Image 1 (cartoon, protein in one colour):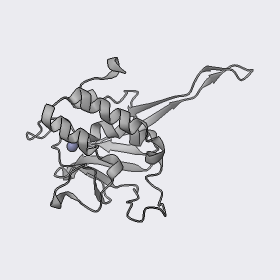
Image 2 (cartoon, rainbow, N blue to C red):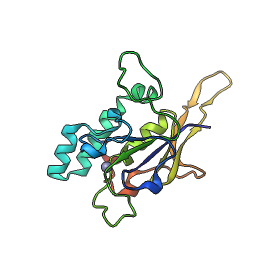
Image 3 (cartoon, protein in one colour):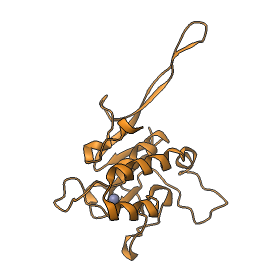
Image 4 (tube, rainbow, N blue to C red):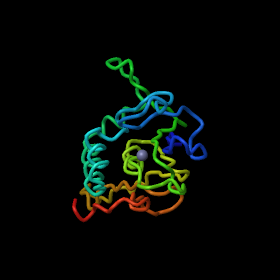
Length: 182
Ligand SMILES: [Zn+2]
């Protein structure tokens, strides 16, 4: 069984996990630090300030995906204590990563939340992610090789809603689709 991280709003208790509540925010206020902060899972501060000013969600999504896309090894190491950084929070099964954004089913919801972009990076790094109450997992289709060992089709790893073949797409939460630009 893959370990699970919960992605939810700080106020959305019904979507949080049984473990610690850890802050995934770039600029948390004093009461938004929870049981610790995980900087890797927060948006870069400059990107957050930019989207707050220009509301360009397409650019914000592309910036986050470029940034997190280059950090695969950091995501893989989120559950490993490291001597070099004693202040580092080590993630454990059942922990919640929270943001202050409102849940999709909340009347206070005004815009999508960066955790909806973050989720697939956690899933590819070995976690299941329960986002706003729904579980995401990894579907691995093995490579097809000939008898001589030539790879005809490489292994495919897809982030899907658990128990379904349905691929995860942040557009479900109101994010502009960037696939045409990458
Ligand atoms: Zn948020």
